[in-house]
Length: 339
Image (tube, rainbow, N blue to C red; front, side, top):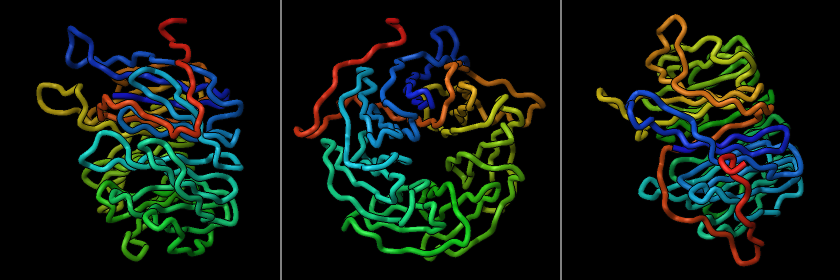
């Protein structure tokens, strides 16, 4: 399993999560690399198999090959800060089919990921895009922007197919794993909607501002934010399923659900969730331990950076990402283990 984090200091961080040789229950976060990949703060990251991408305030997307811990090039089709990046990977594949990105001028770029070639730019919002989410089918995506609007994009035809005003700016939008519902975050409120008609099902109150969210199995939605904890919401009942209070000593800026890992214990797969905080700490949790008074993380890494985002993947891939011929490739960058 791989974890990638971006920081305000322009550094990208890569880790491999694996079991120790003499223990099937102890995990370790092994550093793979660190590198000042952008010339401005990193705003978003995405991982699928051995491919990773980061978007920065330098209007650039960087592409990485995790299997060789190398940066393989840049995508320069945006003209503003890249605020969101997301891969689409079909269920039958371990390598992404598309990369979708959004920027602070309201544009959304669609890329073919085999190789990475720009296909289309769609102007989704009049102001910056805060977040995007790709439907599990790969045929459409949702975006929310600073214009307090929600947009639906037809990724097959490369155009905006739906647009509506929300009345209040949403910072996060996520589809559930099945694509039947989607979630939006407005400050401390998390709303659940039907994907078919965007009908509001119910609203959940986190009490403090939510800064990150990730869907899990069995209708769960994991969130983190100003309260420094990790919360698991039951999106079927609309109630809080469980939480890890004080998971970090600072704001939680990223949360990733890592399911189906190689780190399976004797009684089944642990439900692994990774989180990153603004003080530079990355932790991995088995959320079955959430009912303990003070659960301990399975593993921890301290980057000493102001982390801004986190992404991860439990899918292995031996295929090397490639860029189109018109994009210059980069040499392998410095590994933490070599420095």
